[in-house]
Each structure stands twice: as C-alpha cells, then as structure tokens.
Length: 422
Image (cartoon, rainbow, N blue to C red):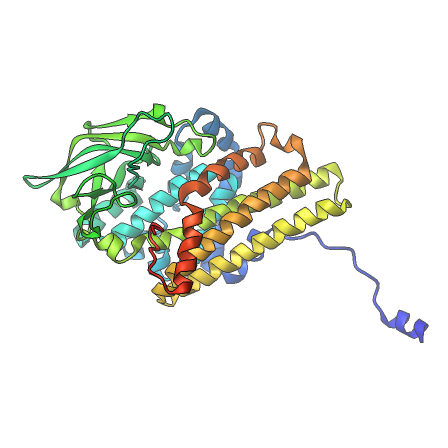
C-alpha cells in the first residue's frame, strides 16, 4: 500500500520564485488599458525616476526632470477628464484603482515625487468636480498641452512648534473684481516647481481648512498663479529628515490678488461635500509603494547574501508579502465603493485603508531592515531613503485621530472624515 501511494504521488516541484506584487495582485483588478498604463509608469519609474531620486533627496530640489518625463509619456494628466485630453481616472470618474496603482509605482521609486504627483492629480480632481466650464477648458489645456503643474495648499498651523519662530495664517479681503490674500502657509508641497496652487483660505480668519475654527461655509478655494511676483518662498523653513524633494516650503502672500474668475466652486462646498475624503486612500497608495520597495529590496539583498534559508529571514519576507497583498485588497475594496457610487461607505473605508496601510508599510520597511541588516541603511540605499521618507510622510495626518474617527463611526458618534477633528 505504501509503495502504491508513493507511485501515485508526484515528486515535489522546485519552489517557484515569487512574482512581483505589481505584476500579480494589482493586475487581477486592472483593465487591459489600466495594465498598460501601470506597466508604462513602472518602466518610467524604474528607469528614470529611481536613478535621480538620491540626487533630489540630497539637494532637496524639485524633480523637474521627472515631471518632464511624465508629460512626454502622456501620463501628466491622470485625473483630467477624457473630453479635455486627460486619462479620465480618479474616484469620481469610475476608476480610482488604476490611478492609485500609478501612484504606487512612482512611490516605489521615490516617495517625494509621489507626494508632488498626488498633489497635482488631486488638484485636477477638484477642478474637474468643482470648477466651471470656462475654468476646466482654460486650466486643463495648460496641463495637457503645456505640462503645467498644480498643487493644493491649506496648511496654516495656529500653534508654534518647539523653537519655531514662524507664524502661519492668511486673511482674505474683498477687492474690485476679486480677492486679496495676505499671510503665509506651511507645508506647501511643490513650492519650488508648481505653476498653480489651489489655496484653501478661510474668509473668517487664519487656519485654512485643517486648522480653522470658523464655519465651513467661509472656506474658499482660490486658484493662484504661482508666478505672481507678490508671492515669496521661504526655503529655510524646510529641512526635514525625509520627503526633502517635495520642497514643501513656507510661502508668503503679500497682498496677492485672485480674480473672481479663479474662485473654484461655492464657499464651503469643499468641506460640506467631503471632497478631502477621496484623497485618503491615495495617500495609502503611496504607503503601499514604500512597502513594495521594501519587499523588492529585501529579496534582492537576501539572494545576494545567500540568506534565504534563514528561518527568521523567511518570517520577515512572509510578513512583508502578506502586508503588500493585504494593502492591495483594501485599496481595491475602497475603489469598488467609489466606483459603485457608495460615497458614504467609500469615505470611511478610505480612512480605514489609510490607517491600515500606513502600519503595514511601516512594518514592511522595518522587516526589510531586520532581514537585510545594518548595511542596508548605508547611503546611498533606496531602503534607507524610503525609511526616512515614510517616517515623515505618514505624519501627513494624525493616525491617532484617523483611528479615533473610524471608532466614532462604528459607535454612532459624530465624526469628520475630511480632517479627523474630534
């Protein structure tokens, strides 16, 4: 009987090499067109963005060449609707998952570039959803035909950090034919490279959108031409541990005039309709890119060091791979909710995904460091740079408040999915 069983049992096959997650998990949920776009972005990121990332990080300079490559590859207008010449992606256009996978491929090579790209793509979402026809025609032509770069700025923290002398806040006054903005903002991503910024300014006083205590109805979205000579940049304010190439300077507005033609939507609509909520899972896509980099780096390093038989190394690799797959599944789940028009469920699910993927990414990088050892943190190292970048980037929202917001939603308490305020 034992011999019979032995004859019927096929010999064990050699273990196959694990495929890259970007070529497996994500591809299951992408259309043929989406797979082509993501493959094109992955190649561009690997061959062009990755070799430049260390230089942009060291010099804390904006990645101009990378954005030129995006424009030349027809990837610069991801969330511009199809009728205006863009790719027509995004949560309100029926295909958020492809957009998030494009972002993931960029983040896998350079998290700073991904943050600048996110700000650009998210700004175009706002123009498509809140702008009037004249604005969309005018501004989308600049993006598609001339490669103009956009960003949205809100940050006006009202309490100073330890040792910080700068004070932030803007005021808004009515003028003939428009509005005058005075004051300053912090964390102004792409300040050294963007052409236009959507300024979130509160007519009732300083605070922008995130830090204001006034009524949401007094929040304005103003499109500002960043070539205006009344605008000055404070590069000295930006000297962080990571995300250096986002050049998120302090910016000063010295009686900057914004014409009525550049006011986007009605006051208060941004918060009233929860537009910020569709960006939370987009941040998670960047975190996922960091996790994929950790997996790729660790696999290459372990094979080079011939450490694949170490059971503890195997544990670390398994943890990263499971985390990467889990993050893909969560982002797909959130994308389906947006695609199905289930906005209320999509908004809170986006916060859940953002919280979970942040921790999966952070753990993945730590697992990679433990599996590879101290030499993996010796510059120049993509893992070392990703560790620094991710450390800063996950501070983009207060994760304690994100989790508390999810808890409030479960307990039936009032909650704010836009900026996670109690």
